[in-house]
Amino acid sequence: MLTPLGWGTAAGSVLLYAAGWWLGYPEPAMFGTAGLAAVAGAVLWTLPQVKLDVRREIAPTRVERGEPAVGVLHVTNRGRGARGVSARDAAGTGSVTVDVPRLRPGGTRTVSYRLPTGRRGALPVGPLRLERADPLRLARRTREYGEPEVLLVRPRTVPLGLLPSGRAHHLDGPTSDRSPAGTATFHALREYVVGDELRHIHWKSSARTGTLMVRRLVDASLPTTTVVLEARPESWPDPDDFELAVDAAASVAAGAAAANFPVRLLTGGEQLAETRGGPDDVEVLLDRLTSAETAEGPRSAVDAVRRVRAGGSLVVVLGGTPSAAEELGRIAAVRGRFDRVVVLRVRPSGPAAAPPGVHVLDFAGLDELAESWRRLGRTR
Image 1: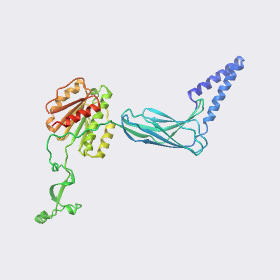
Image 2: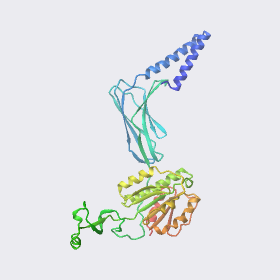
Image 3: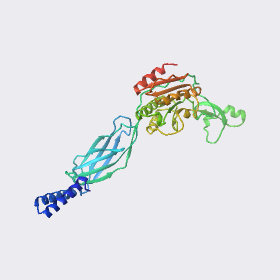
């Protein structure tokens, strides 16, 4: 396929040849002939198909925003010598150009290149396009290899400890009928059903009632950390502020999950995740926040809080606009449903009085948030 330069050269050469022939001047005709010969030679240069085996890897497949990630190409030449080959790998809305060295027949080369990780989100990588062009860039032959892959650029996080809830909880957690079945805590007795383990049979009660009775065991319920991210566009006139808000929500959620505590993560419009705590749940929470975006909707962060179960800690991430400051009064109305309430304000336009029982932390960066969070953790 001719490039724009190739088409222009061919058109110009034809005009020069025609002008020289019409006017009777040999020089323009010679230049036209040379141009057409160059275009023909470029087509012949790229006409043979390059037989390559290409395998692409992304390492790592999940990174924090701003952290390095690379694509690795393993290229093997299965045909004749290949020269003038370059690769363009699609990366999101742009592409990354990679120069592939000359390959001898049967030769293999490994080439690595940086992938853009400056923006959070699921970054589609691929398909890989191998281009072979002549030295004058008059003709080009393109072929696609491989299926698109996805690089997850997740929010940045800083280590945040678990805040004390401010209320004493039973060591074994509540033993209500709504507690999930498990193996840790005795809750009640019930009749035996097929499939129950014999080791859970309570023999004294079975002898007294004449019916096989088994112990019902539940898992201890730990205080849940509820993280609410304000996602209405009017609260985030600066996109960088929303990115910092997502980073803050990710840091709080990851810190609680890493401490093996349940985490509930939601915006005004939807629930993003609800986990029971543990290292695996940290990965789940970060993956869910990777796709978090602002969205129009009538419900605010406080409206979302009213729909969740009471108890545990509540952390609300707000913007710094005057409208976001009005949310503080509404948050105070739900204060009694939670053991501890913390409001994180991103780059606020001015100070705001904290309602009774609500802790307000203003920050302009993750390091500042980490320091304020540590000070808050030392208070009761």
